[in-house]
Amino acid sequence: MSPNCIIFLDLSLGLVGLFIVYSLFFKDNSLSLPPGPAGLPLVGNVLDMPSSMEWLTFAQWGEKYGDICSVTVLGQPLVIINSAQVARDILDKKSAIYSDRPTLQMAGELVGWKNTLVLLPYGDRFRRYRRLFHKLIGSTAAMKQFNPIEEAEALRFLRRVLYDPDNLSMHIRRAVGATVLRITYGYEAQESKDPFVQLADQATEQFSLATAPGGFLVDLIPVLRHIPLWFPGVTFRHKALAWGSTLRDMVGRPFDYAKQQMTAGTARASFTSALLWGKVLDQQEELDIRWSAASLYSGASDTTVSAIYSFFLAMTMYPDVAKRARAELDEVVGINRLPTFEDRESLPYINALVKEVFRWYTVVPAAVPHRSTQDDIHEGYFIPKGTLVVPNIW
Image (cartoon, rainbow, N blue to C red; front, side):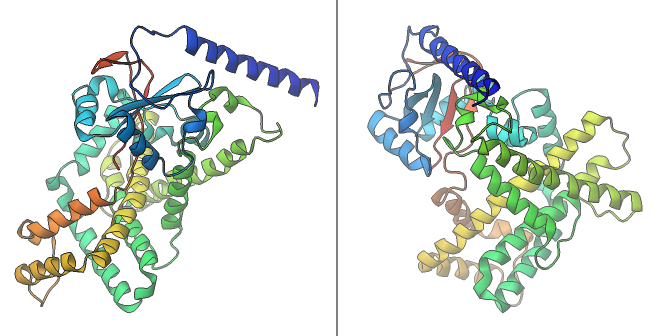
């Protein structure tokens, strides 16, 4: 090993050691964290952290230690919430403290997802994003302008399923991607293998891998993100470069398409065109719109696909429920036309069925972690500033 490698390794180990010592000996120990599995000296619960399907492990801890439990990984506290009431008490009633997001080294810093709404720290930029969303899609009344798009794509989806039922998964992905692209950018997707639909699929799959708890050591030891690419064994850095390239394409290419259509005078009504139309924007304002649109595009693409998969699974497993939903449709809509948004209020059973699908097969079982911005005491437990808080929705 070269002298430079040895010096870098010594420096990295020294910084990690200082971090662990600080975490162990210079924190407030007057009150204890919520209960949880016993950890090891120095490293804490590193070996207890699940590498996949973490919500199941979190639920087991909840059964053993209570609705609020905790672990510590290399000095980083992680609080897990396993009940709706505790989630409301902490995340709703104390939202001023718990609305922040953690800095995820792999997904956020190295790949670049930190600019999307899901990982954006609580602050001015977060509030600007929320205002942009609320203005155009923040209410049922605002969303009505996009109802014709959703109905048209739903009809195309039904036609594809009718003629090619063996490729249901592909039809769902295409329908969702096409709908989101039209709403977000005014772009009409190709019938098969649309490049923008494929980009969203690829980028969201990479996001899931990059945010998996315990998936990358750099999330536990942030100093590792500074290891140079030439250093042996840093495969995570090379993955981050490749995934970052996918993300930049996903953010930039459809946005540039929308701008080009506006310049040509052929742009369709969309989230992006409404925010850009007739305005002279500075660099920061355009950046906010670009990443807000990407947040909508990427977030809806993956989560909606998952929910529709779950719906078809539920109807297969519970045919009596499907029969009752069909009976309501026949009674309200009849057999000579297909339902529209105008029928929604007259279909209470189907509305309840959709909500039950969301509950039954949660799209994001362990949610995206929150981060506390100051010390807090909850139910006699000490939750220090900087704690990661995971609501186990599953």
